[in-house]
Length: 179
Image (cartoon, rainbow, N blue to C red; front, top):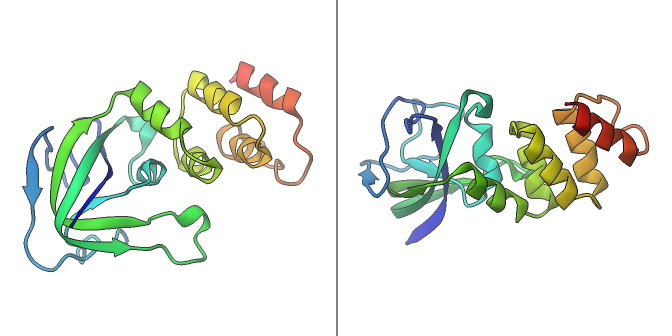
């Protein structure tokens, strides 16, 4: 069995443990495959997500990250987030083997993100760090979604009462221009 998805790394292509990953190579682990991100001592396997917006939760995008398209295979275990977690954060696979197919350029990452449904772009806006131009592109792409506007106002533009009042599209455009 195999699964295609995305994996985030530090900007130097290392994981959180400092291991360097290279494009085109396969990495393997042995033992029981145990997904999870809460206790790093207990987990085993290479983690990936089929949803690109999930990977931004694990690395601080403001410090620079790299994202790769990957294929996981061999023994696979799926970790599903508890139902109380909004937007299905943390749904991921842990894999016995992972192939780093290729690292994505920033414009490719944005193309992938802009193809997501509203729930996916909201996940990105909650934990990602888009540039001003990227925020404007997201706003223009999802301009008919009050949910995207409210999430953008709250998490990206610092308008803390955005869920308590009617969205003012002119205010959103003004805040985007002045960011």
